[in-house]
Image 1 (cartoon, one colour):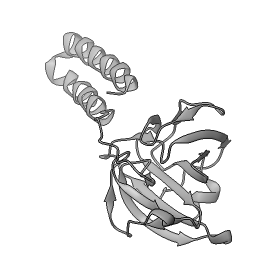
Image 2 (cartoon, rainbow, N blue to C red):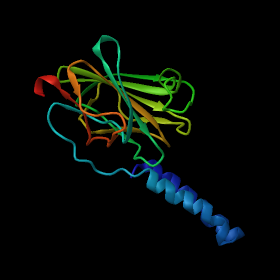
Image 3 (cartoon, rainbow, N blue to C red):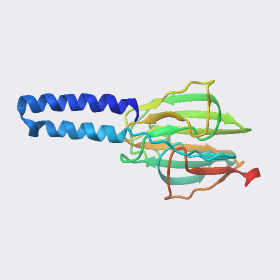
Image 4 (cartoon, rainbow, N blue to C red):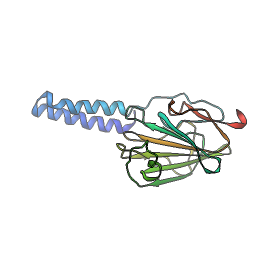
Length: 202
């Protein structure tokens, strides 16, 4: 479990206990239910990370878009609802070359304009002769992006790197050397679902 969930869960449970003591058990139930939800929401299950020249999903959720970008790049958009695991993972092994944070709005993350207007954190990882960018994008409910790594650090594919609290979206930008392996509407899991495979190894 992510430690944030423990903090929220303990605080809400304590509040529920106080309210139940002062006003009666029934009045403490909403806070106790909120505590249980936080403990469940911040779950962090272990994942089997596939080996080989692949890019894995950085987030749990549903693929809501796959599109072509300038320069032969491909963009995969993954939407996380409130029921998904929200821990984010590195898509490939390599060196973190850049972390670019942008303040912005909190539009519904599935909307097209969210990519340009919403608060977000774009991370560039370079490794194995390839560069992959994944962007944590805040949404309508999500109000905080967490990224625990620094520029210059090395990450392994599937390694935990952060999370987005309470729903949102993660986009992955891949170069022409990658062959996309997923389709729109498919559900993926962070660290274990293969998004793309290096073409020379296909």
